[in-house]
Length: 369
Image (cartoon, rainbow, N blue to C red; front, side, top):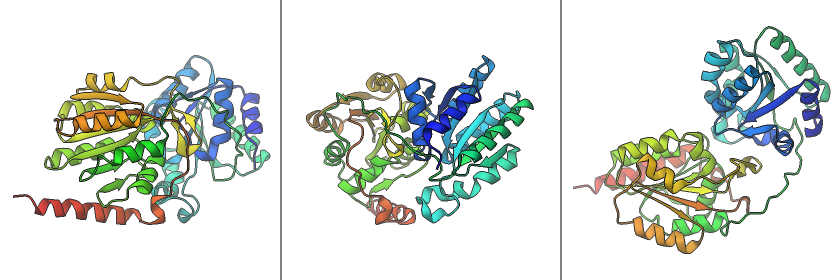
């Protein structure tokens, strides 16, 4: 296995000075070291990471992007229409989740795991698969330099257990709530609602606290839980709809909030759990400062925006909006980390989650006059 220290030292040796990306646990070590050095800027999504790296290149600083292959779709537009079209060479490290055996990873990685190499080949981007040896990294970085000389991009694909990890220094948190306590408190107010929960630990936590056929655990498709909730809320105005989001997921596609504010479904409550980190990939930070969620919600067009830091505030705000027309946004500030909840797939396949959710929706439709 390649140590995170050697990985970063090789990038230094080749003169890379700026890094951006969206975390993956396969690259947890490099993310930690690069952030400690101050040369890494976390991006809300992979496309922004690539465009920042391109801007850095245009300013004369060699740059690299680190991302998960599930976010490759977010990369393709700026990769093909910006970096390739304008001949701005970039180095990309992309993890290979769901590869080579889909069954070794969570189901939502299966399709992209099988397609990643083909996608890169289809758009004509040179690439190589990193082996767990220092020599392999050295050779692939040399290939990247050859592509750079031709003003082209190069992608280094990173399988599981290829790059080592390292400790991420814990930073003190002022949050009073942990994730489980917050989700438990929220769940008390969600009986009867159709609930969409975002990818990662939040869906797992909701599953562990309050499994229900009316919960749709969205694992994967980061940033799109609010789209699911909005689509349902607009088409089933007779149902209460709640979305439990994470701060990183909500920021990834803020346009979803703008659309909620424009359409203004009265039956939608949007809850954002903000711990400033990506817990499911190693605790990397999402931002350096807290979002002013209530102000953002009101500016986008939500009818109400609230923030909570205690169980009592959760109970108060959830009760207050229960009988008010929405959309509502409630941000809950929580501590990062916490106990690891069970995976949804330990009990339900993705298809089963969909089937029972649709069954609940169909049952309630039969009750309509």
